[in-house]
Amino acid sequence: MIECILGRLVEKSPTHAVIQTGGIGFHLPIPLSSYDALPLPGEEVKLYTYLVVREDSLTLYGFAGLDERGMFERLIQVSGIGPKLALTALSGLPLRDLKRAIADGDVKRLSSISGIGKKMAERMVVELRDKLGAAESLELRSSEPGMSSNLRDAILALVALGYKQQEARKLLEKVQHTHPDGLEVEELVRKALSGS
Image (cartoon, rainbow, N blue to C red; front, side, top):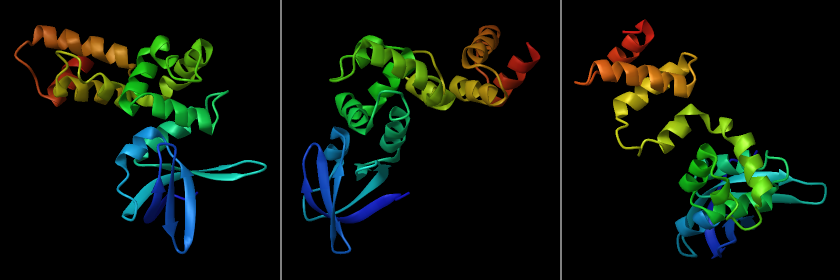
């Protein structure tokens, strides 16, 4: 796999970037969010890449960050979503909003993206919700009122020990209810495991 490309930005548009490196100009389709992160033409730029090999083409896609590329890789694993539709999804919503819509099962929000209907949105939720992982889904919910960093870290610790996220949260909320003065992460986890 070609991990990234570093070179001089020759041309940029909301749909692609041309980067010259080693005497070669590479045309890379990009999402809108990556376009916003690009410098002015003539300046040096680094894009993370993903190579899609088809029977009749080799296409190198570019991304400003690893999170974007990771989401692109997840999206193209959903049946019915190819690279172009994955780029459209990344361009249709900010990355954080796209992940939140998937994690929350917000089919209406996902189907507001051009080219994604209700059935495709439902498929995205079903196939990707679990792939976001506990850490990402907790990060998305970290803005919930009342969710302290200690509680979030304790939930992650319990998930790492094999508990389901909802189950871990219920255990810890019970502990917090009996100890309203607040506890450190280690103490929260210990009390949740011992049931006190």
